Amino acid sequence: MKHFGLRSIFSLIVAITFINSCGGGGGGTDPIPQISNTSPFFVNNIGEIEVDEMQLSVATISASDNDGDILQYSLSGNDPSYFSITNEGVITFNQPPSYFDKNEFSILINVTDNIVSITQTLTVFLLRVCSDSFLGKTVCFEEENTTVEYDRANDYPTWQDWDGDCQNNRHEVLESEHIDDDSNHPLVFSSDGCFVNSGKWFDPYDNLYYFSSSEVQIDHVVALFEAHKSGAWSFPASRKLKFANNIDFDDLLIAVGGSSNASKGSSDPSDWMPDNSSYYCEYLDKWLNIKSEFRLGIDSDEKNSIENYYQENSCQN
Image (cartoon, rainbow, N blue to C red):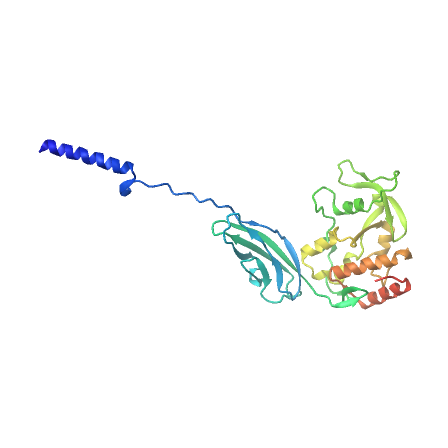
């Protein structure tokens, strides 16, 4: 009996070992397969956008995922309650927005595949709507607001270096408006390349050439104080800064002599026009383009003067 018991026990051990080696009996576990996941990504990266007041449509944000996962969109940040977003990335205002109630909004756009989330910031600037037609432009006829405080240094600081190349926007304008047709007056920079020292510039206001950058000033065709009274006072701070430094809108800034810039000051066409009468039509066209583009008001004296100059000089719309 003792001998039989030992043999039985030995056989049982062998059988159990065999079963385990074959994966039977649930004693072993297969490794859990690892599922890889790639992060979703934004197809279009919109940092800021301008929208007309009373318009519901804002933007469509597009995101994708290389795994083909279904993406979900949501909003957070400072002002999400003003907006809705669909799972196709379509952002709309919940109510028609009014410019003078609020004209700058900041939201975070969140996209997730339920494993990884990504976020981008969107600033929405509201623009007021002008509905008056004047010499082929859509404008706002209104009198100047002379009661609002004007703080030139804090509200409209110049000059910024937008592209970070050490040349601020004053020197960007000097470079772009340099006349490269005179070997005696090439464009000369400082040793570090950050400043324009000399070159050749034409002042259409006085019909004169200048060759030293120290004699040239960068004029805001619509002066900052004039713009402020005409509606820029209501711009958010970031739009005031952009207006003061804008080198992307060709008509806004011009290189002129210090004398003509000083005589102009912050005058509109009812108080000042260039000495060079052959430049009247082009000057007024720039003026109206700026007023229309930035939704700045045109007062009655300004309007009458522009109309008279257009007629007297046979300017074309």
